[in-house]
Length: 145
Image (cartoon, rainbow, N blue to C red; front, side, top):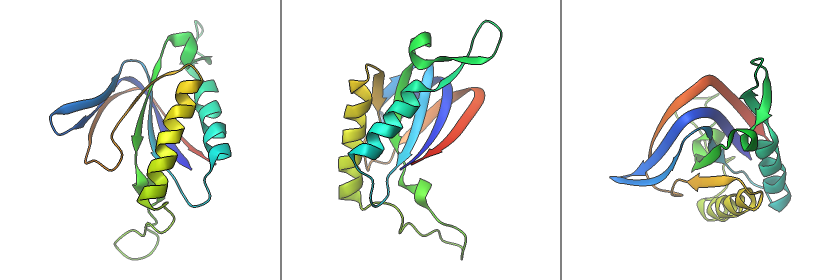
């Protein structure tokens, strides 16, 4: 599982003219799944994301977590995070889980995140989405399990 986490002031994902998910301050997660990902992978990632301390305290140090800030999470499926462009001009996506497997993992990941008590919004798996964000920092992390 790969997650590109961006700390945001606000973010929204749209499917056509419809807003699928919108948050204020928090984390935008671009999320991809690979072969062998399972419930343990999802639990580890949810715990990692929710537990990260990426917001500044009174001294400007990253000591505050999502809950401390009343932040939310916006999750967007992004299989292209498993794109391998080392050879040729067109990336290979053989490391990405097949769509039916990835969709089930995506849905379970949302459930696991919500079970932590975090406020979670999401995009729409498999849809063509427009993602708009205002980076806060910018702070961007690549997390893989």
